[in-house]
Length: 267
Image (cartoon, one colour):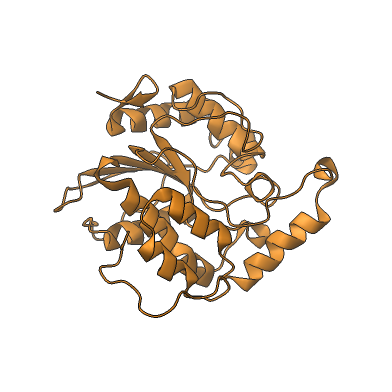
């Protein structure tokens, strides 16, 4: 799908070329194709080196694992009405398992809450073949590679940005709400929504748990509800800044805004 209005000219860039994300994001005709291109990307040398170093050294608890050690695509159905946008895969979580929020404490917290709301088929996520399914929800991130110290650079964020733009575009007019986990995701997502055609308020609202932004329908874009949520990091969950009840309540509100009932799209 062409998400920029014009298709890049010339031969396809190599996966290590900085132009790789923009080129293939603009040409992907569906989420399956987009996800395949995401997983092949090597456009950020620092992130490539880190994700592969982590896979080579491993943690003792995961010494028998063959790490994914590639960019982690989004996860969820192509007709999702609700998107959950995080930060980036964890070094020993998604970078190990190859699926967003799978295999770490943050994911355990998030998937248990999604299951409690009826948006996930099971409360746990351990690996790509564990049978977990999401109902009406797609989980993604503005950065698809695990960054050192969980801190991607602005340049890495911007280079990865076309993937998120294309993903939201491919979800199409059925996308009705977005839950953004953490300030980094909030800051990364709002410009993407603006580029996609939604009119953002000025000044842009600051991130906060429970912050709700209604973006009016414009042309082919339907009204979109954007909700801020504290990231389910161990720092936030251990200190009680984000409790399980808080997350369940916010996801339940988001599901209602997206028209999701009973674990799937409303009729």
